[in-house]
Length: 229
Image 1: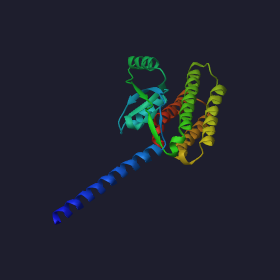
Image 2 (image 1 turned 90 degrees about the horizontal axis):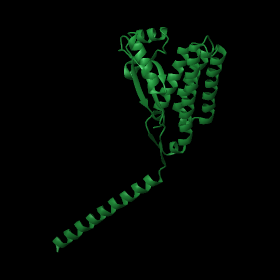
Image 3 (image 1 turned 90 degrees about the vertical axis):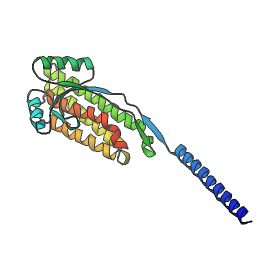
Image 4 (image 1 turned 135 degrees about the horizontal axis):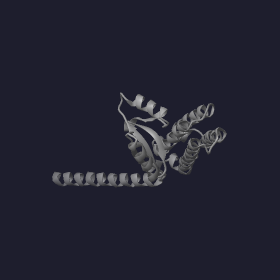
């Protein structure tokens, strides 16, 4: 009799455990289905012309690059200084070849925006996040054209200043549209770029300064997913 009771008790607890597992799986699946998710696919690709350095020489390389006409943007995660950013690999490799022939060791660093995932309320902001990335990409291209124009004397100081002030205005428009909350961390990036743009527009404009801001915006596009985790 006791054996039967033990077996019945064991069977009951086994059935109860199985029931709890099934319920747990059901709730997990239900919660996953009810949770909003979205995937952001940007696709922007940039080609950075860089000079390698180390911690000790980074400042010197950045300074020398700036004095020589490059942006001099320090890219710490790569132990490199960015001289310029291009949208076509052929343009970047052409300049790389020219500089290498003149004894300046440079290389092309190719970077592409990676897909990232959004959950909950952040998923609802997918369209606006994509619009932010697209706007920064467009602004960077305008600055790229203005910088090239300054070098070739086909764009005046006034024309280049209009490009920079227009960039600042567009960034301000994004800030207004974004609001805080979901975009709080990302807005810090936009404000930093706006501040640099105002500083550039306040003085004599050089192509390397426009390229610096252009590079900053391109790198922001590539890292935008980190601000919405």
